[in-house]
Picture (spheres, rainbow, N blue to C red):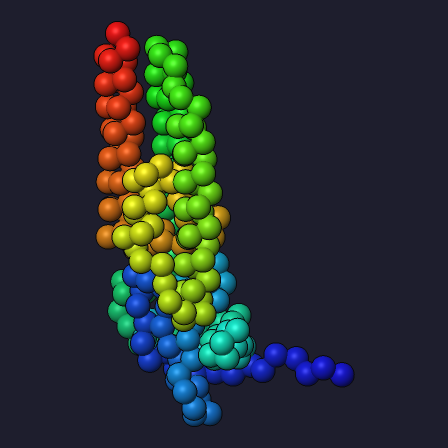
Length: 208
């Protein structure tokens, strides 16, 4: 009979709440174990350094230890305001409304003048590539591997992949809690949309 997962416990010695990961020092000793926020139940209180954590010991494909199915067994003594009940849920509705709004803008422009079909293909293709890039970066974060640079994710958004980025952020729950990244991301969305409108206007004047 195959043995079940090994259940362990330890103390959360480091935690980066902005990036959503940290390391647990096992109670039995040995190397620290990587733990990601996605290992905790959705809606559970955010972990903080000093928490006693229960988890199932797992290993990445590279053989690195990581925590799965984690839970807080004993909270560290911290002021109530320092602990948030669950991750800050950024509304997915706003992102999807941005995509819908851009679709409306593109539709109005198309009524005024023809929009080359390759423009639509560019946005679809860039969105697919961007979605994959977010998924790969999320997996790398979970396994402690090399990450996709944030600059690359933002650049993909600027060239037209931002709709795919919005979908990826909600579907794979990635990059939604880092305020600095979100600020730069929405700047990249505005830059792309303004660029689209400006180029469409210049094309209209040239044809006119």
